[in-house]
Image (cartoon, rainbow, N blue to C red; front, top):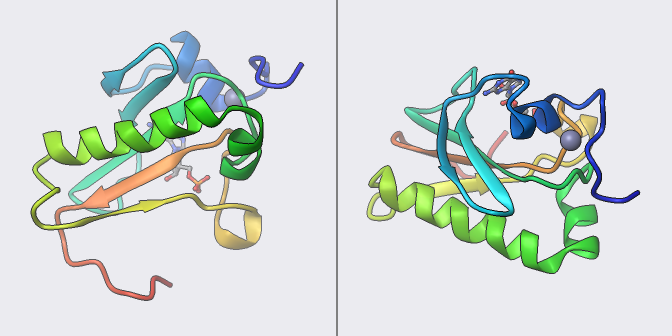
Length: 119
Ligand code: 5GP
Ligand code: ZN
């Protein structure tokens, strides 16, 4: 069923606790944890607890959880003191755009200069 945990999904395993992660925030619908291979001084992933393969399918199926992910991204940025310097929220979508984990996730990146447009 849509949104149900997938046995072969790394981020579902982080939600269940089967795979450990450095969790910085958690709500009923989301988990935020540090990326294992950070690309900036702050690099946190915010995921819905429900499994959807990408941000667009999450948004189509569960607008409330989508809003929760975006709100939590802002809360992470504020906790990491990025809200004054600026930060970037990225949803890589599709392998051609660098998506490697097919469970929707927002990257929250900051703490260094961020070029625009990104590569
Ligand atoms: P994507 O490339 O799909 O947009 O982002 C997936 C992210 O998950 C990558 O930035 C990668 O470093 C991160 N990642 C992959 N495996 C793990 C893991 O086991 N733990 C954590 N915390 N992050 C991971
Ligand atoms: Zn999943």
